[in-house]
Image 1: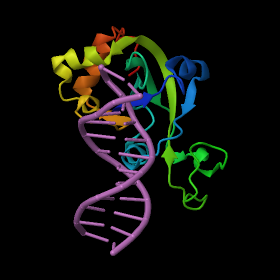
Image 2: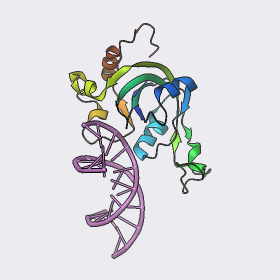
Image 3: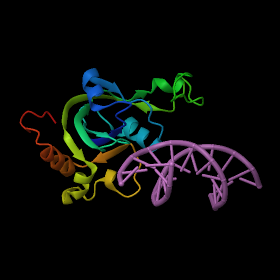
Image 4: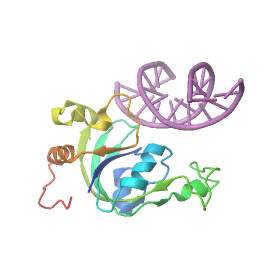
Length: 158
DNA sequence: GCCAACGTTGGC
DNA sequence: GCCAACGTTGGC
């Protein structure tokens, strides 16, 4: 069981979109490290912090979970897609994704608030120059953030 | 819109 | 395999 932080631009897929759809195929990741996390390490039931990036108020906005094993990102085969990859084939797909189930919206934990929390000093997403759209979160960091969003841990399945 | 930081590409 | 040039991310 692992924990992750996954960035999404709210004008692409916001936490509200994710909640409305319940399950989101995490399409469009075109970075090998992020792909490898999804392909090799993510398991059904892993906890996910839903993060809004490239927007007015960047930060954590929700909690989700991994709900599928990895499978090929269909957009890589779609010539009309922004995420089309001419080098990918059905036989040898290059990009893998997982499905994410949105569980709930939280209050916004802004980037500033995350940076101000001493217990989160070592969080990968806060490290200088980090651009990875998917980063691991350790159990202590996860607990700290869950505490910060004041989720009733009794009801929280994660 | 700026720009730091990082990833990718491709010539050699 | 090196590395310069270019592209992307993402906060500000």
